[in-house]
Amino acid sequence: MKYIKYIFLLIFILSCSNILYNHNDAMSMLVSKDLVLERFGSPTDIIEGGEYDEYYYDFGFFTERLNYFSQQISTVSESDSLYNLIENEGAPQHRIKTTKKYIKFHIEGEKVLYWESQAVNFPVKKQ
Image (cartoon, rainbow, N blue to C red):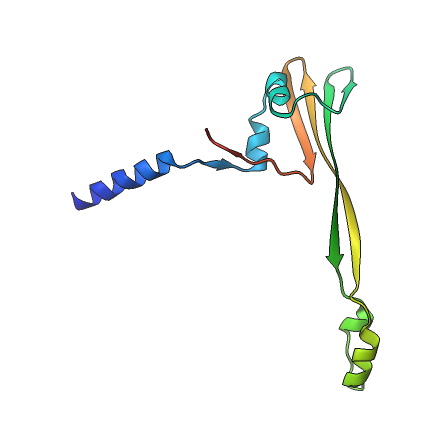
């Protein structure tokens, strides 16, 4: 009997919280053209095809700095002295990676056939 109160309290707390849908779940809920337009507005580009239309939303570019290790720096032999390692270390090594951010919806009539996205994340809270 004592545990029933705790179970009801847990159910009450969970029902009041906002549940977060991840990006894949949120995009999969967009099953019609109207829902896509309501969520994202007018597309950047519409490519009309024979079987379906492609609604393309361009979100620009995402640039990130990736660190990596050179074989020269990461491989140390016994003959190397600490002085030589410090001299050869130089500036930190990295590369810049640029990724295009977009979402594409393939729409046939009013129905979304499938969607594709890259470098975007649009989770939503359950209302």
